[in-house]
Length: 259
Image (cartoon, rainbow, N blue to C red; front, side):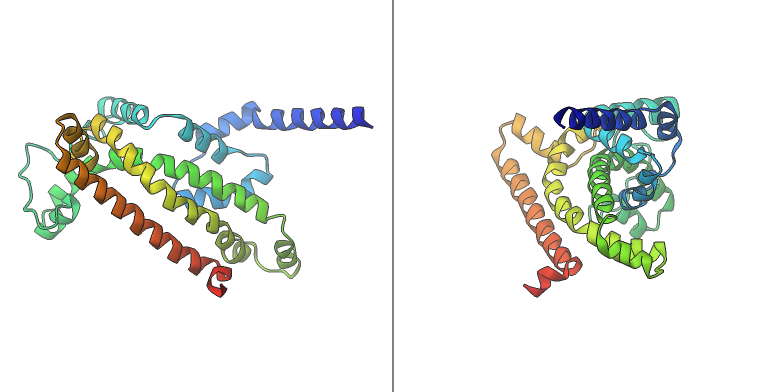
């Protein structure tokens, strides 16, 4: 009996291994254009996983495994130096006139000033830092949402809904997605602190004048007041974001509202 259990376990593991590393799946990983948003990628993946495709798993594991500063350097080489699509570093083109400061947010200030050319320039400069900063969040949310969706598909209420003839899209939006977002929303609150810490490396590589680089320079110069101000600001942001997360969590999960 024990020998049969061991053989069956090894056999199932080999089948899973073949399915995961099949060359056709590797080609699908490199050609799938479905990485358009963390929620859509994770939500749609429950249908693809049933067909043996592991695109989101490949992308998410790769994004989590790679350091953010290395991603920033690779984007500089690819998008800025080779393809000439984005600027290499900085916040704004030094050859252009800096817009009048209303809020301190460059994109909003250019819109308030009515300068569309400056807005387009500022938008090109912010794409690369925003992409580096959000890639880890996209990867983690994708993995969490994908796992929750696959677990929910085996629940009895999903089978009952399909047996009653409810449309698959309605099942996905009303039952699966709403239940899967519970763990995802909770995780987003904890990622904010990590994101603010990782911003120091991204700002240093991309020469972005943000609060992370400001705090780093203050620490190197032993200027304690800016360090305390940056720490207090980051702490307030984390508290506010977690408060918003708790409110959204109560809206999503009716069991929390009942208690």
